[in-house]
Image (cartoon, each protein chain N blue to C red):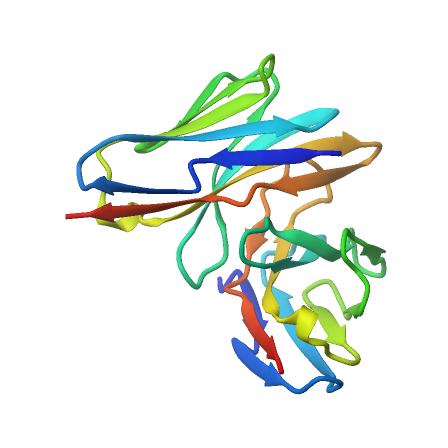
Length: 114
Length: 114
């Protein structure tokens, strides 16, 4: 099992460009999440998907869109990148959207917006 | 506002020594508390998860304690190894209806040296 995989590992964008971050999990989990991690701050939830076909905003959704393509895949799109979106992005999954579930994280995508 | 504060921010110890990391939280209503280990350039990996009724939980050389009355948790690492060098993140879950909201601490960066 690969667990949670993310592509690309690293990306440089110019302000205004768009891109999609891909995430896939092979653990048959129902719930998936996108976080960003910035220096000196805890992980912050961007969007989550409780189950296939549903998505909801997290703490910092502005400037992002998501698609739960199927049970395995959950993508994050930046329509018009801004320097403030320079960050490390983590995808995670869990069996259910419940407080007692362990989240499994991917290796992260490092994004630099110039 | 839900908050999780960790101390110290960073710590350097000699290999073989013990150390204790602290986590104070103001999260309500409390559901559970987790400790994650994040190696440099990798995603967080779960170490322990503790519910309201649990005071102590161990995972190998890692022992987590929880005092729900004072809203404090600690992570004790015994006989540290070079591979323990990482950031340790405290995450507290608040139960909100059928969902849960996670609040992440900013982490303690531990360096184990020879």
